[in-house]
Image (cartoon, rainbow, N blue to C red; front, side, top):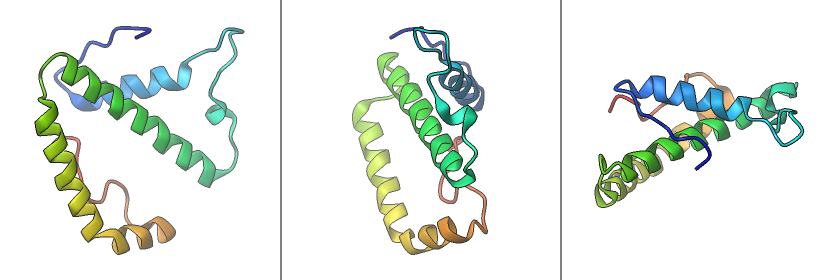
Length: 112
């Protein structure tokens, strides 16, 4: 891993730090390797920010597993539980994707 991640006690701080790290990463020429910062299309920009959040969550989960703070089997059970919950509410999620009536997240919280 390029830079070692040190997790804090506040998960929201960890995600914010990782999102900033991902967005500010440079390529070999010193230019931003992520065109997200220059994107003008709002819908595309929203999707790219979602991808950044997914990458940050993946990094935190991998770090928690490495530090043995989370058991992979427990994480798998949690993922299966959330997958079932999301599939039960898929129509509501789809409609909200189109209308943007509710702010995200609909069915999860980083504190849980």
